[in-house]
Image (cartoon, rainbow, N blue to C red; front, side, top):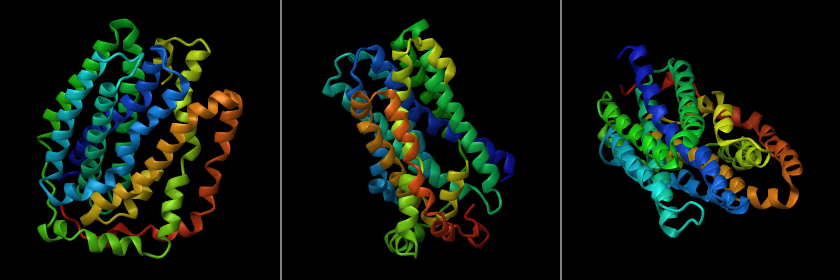
Length: 328
């Protein structure tokens, strides 16, 4: 398959991956804040992201059953359904029903992430990773802007209900589009034997350093993220103004994963990455309430430094992808 065609599919898939993440991490804090939810509760809403951490638990199912592209389409249909239900619950006093809907969105999004990441690693040939990462980062960022910026910008004009319904319509369109993605073949015997390769991969020298590095790499960013938009609202910015304001690490993750077992291995690394984001985000509202915005933001500045000390060990895990046979 020509590289240009691969990159077009990667752009579409990572737009689909970034859209629900932006909905939860970028739109939801604004939606809750303007609805009168406290900073502490907005911070605790970061725990909705736990499926992005725990997805490694069910990631073997994506490798073992069905095709990865079928998983992607099914997840997008689920995202469309539950995004359309979100605005029909009272955001000002979140109930168990609303939390259940939002949690289902993150479960579907996390499962989609597993399938998309594994599909992409299988689609890309050795030497194409740089182009693929550039496209997927850009597409993901466009999706974050479309949701975290675009939907927030539209909400004051058309209302929150219409904004969530637009998100649902986008998911439906993406489901139809991704259904036609080209097939990436993974040998049946490799799909069945995921546990032994996973154990071997985890026992490689330096594994502890890689996981600690992934855990701490963006800890500061994760800690500050949930409080940025509430801070802007408290400083007088309108929802519309917030909407207007709104690659290297992904390449590292690709280079330490094996194509044949990408779903499980990439999910494990991204789960550790998500753990720091969710835990730090969960306590961000509590800490900001007690320290104030200024002191808390200064604290987040120092949180990422410990991960940098692990770089000499981590770099030994980056293997030459040219030695890995293509499965395309």
